[in-house]
Image (cartoon, rainbow, N blue to C red; front, side, top):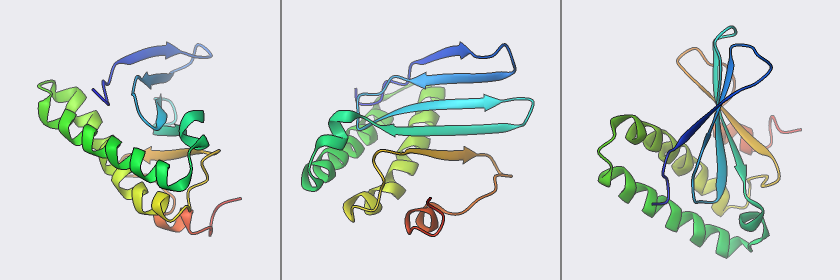
Length: 134
């Protein structure tokens, strides 16, 4: 399975902040963070060193294979919670793919996606176009 969503709950700083690391065999490591006090939920996508070391054509092929396997895993799981997590990752990855193909994604940066209806910020397209990258 490309996306076996096994969560490991870690308590940090003895606060209400929780970090869950998804065990995923793919191009990136994903962490889910939740800060109940601040009402913030985020997904942090960090590309693996192996993925970053690939050439553009290899990265695109690897990412396409990852999306294909993830879609298959979504269809084959019976666990509703895992399925929802995989769908969320799939949707974000699908939006990221054209930017990866165009070599617009800063692979050495961690991409942070805020979750929820009241999140603020710009769209992924605006962020990757360079308008908000430092």
